[in-house]
Structure formats: C-alpha cells, structure tokens
Length: 121
Length: 116
Figure 1 (cartoon, each protein chain N blue to C red):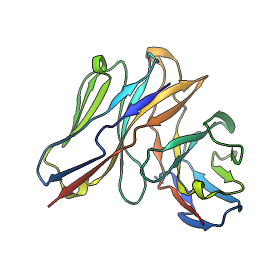
Figure 2 (cartoon, rainbow over the protein chains, first blue to last red; figure 1 turned 60 degrees about the vertical axis):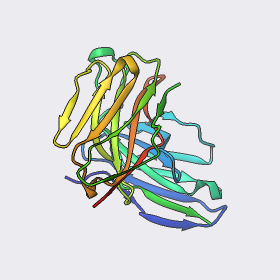
Figure 3 (spheres, rainbow over the protein chains, first blue to last red; figure 1 turned 180 degrees about the horizontal axis):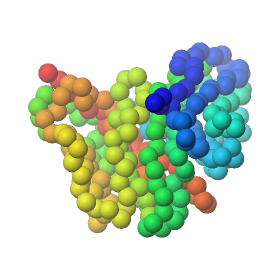
C-alpha cells in the first residue's frame, strides 16, 4: 500500500512568488494536516482538513491557504513568499482526527510523507 | 497550552550502547496521546509509537522500549544495543484538542549519532 505521497520533493522559489504543494493521503484516510518544519526545529501545525472541511488552523499568516479535494488529496498554497518560508513542509494523514471523546474516544496513528523541501531565495 | 520538551539536543554513542531519549510534556487535557517519530536525513517522519494517556503500561518493541510516567509527565524512549542505522533525529509529540480538532505539538527533537 502506498504511504503518504507529497510533491514536489524539492523546489526553489524567489521571494514574492507563489507555491503550491500537493499531498495524497493513505488510501482510506480522510484527514490531512500540514506542518512546517524549519531547520533545527520540530514541525509546526499549519492546517488540518477532514472530509474536505478545514478543521483547524495554526498560527500562520493569511498568505498560507489550503484545500482538500473529494478524493481527500490536499494542496497547500503559500503566496508572496518570504525568505523565512524556507522549510520542509510535511503532510500528515490519518483515518480520523483525534477526537475529544474521553477515555473511549477514538485515536489513530498519524502518518507523515517525506515532505517538500522549499527554498526561497 | 501544550508543550513538549526534549532537553537533549544531540547524543553521541558508540554502537551497541544503550541510549535513552528524554521527553517531558505539559498539557491540561485529561485525554491525550503521545507519539515518538524518527526523522532520517530524507525528511520523512517515521511513526514509532502512540500511547494513550490512560495507558501507562511500558512497551517494548524489539530494541525499542518506552517508559510512560504520568506522575512526572514524561515519556522516555530507550534504544538497546544501538546500531548505526538508528542515527536520526527523534521527535516526541503530544496530541492536543483545540475546539474540536487535534494537532500534534512537537519537541525540538534529539539528534542521535551512533558511530561504529
């Protein structure tokens, strides 16, 4: 079975440009999340989508946007790129978002893709 | 607010040594999940384990073992008889709830270097 796939693997953009990153979740998974990982840090949450709806958004500017398609794949868009946007962008896939159901609540494994390395020059 | 602290930035060991990676977390949630991921140079985060906050049993998987202690808010990871292939950055993460959805809060990671 294919894991989480992301494209492109590497890309270089110029300041002010726009970029679109793509993610295909594991078959059967309906939730996709995006994380940004800058060098030397842990990943930071950007967006979560479930069943094509935005479930949550991290502390990122409006230049960042995303969407999820009927086949559950997702795109992350970043406009007006800044040097500080240079990072590894990771897509995470899970069957359902972890819920607040208490002791009996559902929880499931979150799998990550290999990421898209974005360099802004 | 959720917080994960991995105090060890980098650890260097010689092959076959045992090594423990520390993880301390903070959360106000009563239900939460803890994760460990391995990140090789390629960048992919490889899932290692998920632990429910209500399950404090320690777990062993081959050379890997995890010690979850709720009383000290710690979820430490031990590699027994380390191998060169274990060299990677290891992240501890905590799932949190924010108005009906969950996210992962990661520590800054611990780079493990295993030399022959």
